[in-house]
Length: 357
Image (cartoon, rainbow, N blue to C red; front, top):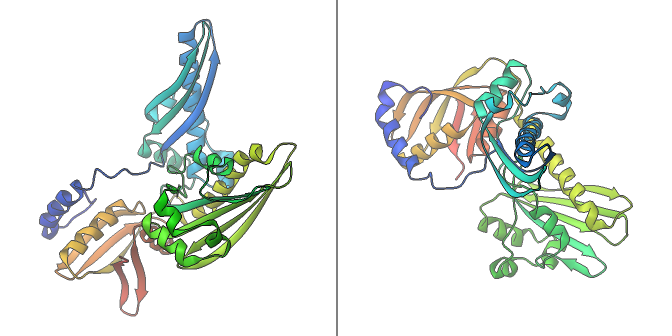
């Protein structure tokens, strides 16, 4: 439920609770889940090796999480939590692909951490953090090699992206199905010609606002050049990455994928990382045309992590006056609300909030 509600809004709060109850079946991403941590340990027995490996895996997953939530410039001061203390932060974990011998244990594990416990640690250490995600983007990996251009066919560039957890990261991405409907909407020629109309149709199918084209050029041994195009209603942009090494381009792909994802994460953190400090409260007028839109707005406000409390002063069938207590700057708050399809703007008569769609 909302953090603070006036007495006049109790009935609507109960209605709101019933409303969101019907949406809980939707699968959501979890920024506090770290997947696919490989563990390997030896000891006097396989059982002892398992215990060592799992503790080590949880500790390494915790460091991955802290870096995920914070800026690169703050990584040198991130805390090192002992294996004895790590259980304080872990909600649950699971292991897969277990292999054992008489003294050795190998597996892959995923760890889910307790959000508030982790964030309290960062607050105590006065380390700025981001606990929000950007809106998911649709990712289209295009490979150009000696055999030509490939978009929908199976190829190692697309497989490199599929092996990474694209959901539980600061700037999440979605890979397309590549089914006949996708192929009918967009082909590789459309991509090369920057056919934004076809891209927009595909984006609509996946309910995203942005399409990312990761075009890998792999015609030389030991070299991989990647051009990353980003298309949205706000326009388009491009950045290029070059990777070299004494390896085949396919062997460099994993490094390229991680680097590109880090670039998107860094950009998102510039707008979403909040300095640890006091909350700010201001008044905003919420505009809507029907009560169903108001309930949707309440749901999205509850999900906005920048908002720490909400108080309703006036409530009518087509508008409300709210007080919002938030952390960070008002620009960051507006960006945070935009991720939930809400527009926060300052007009002549004050701040106004409405649904984007």
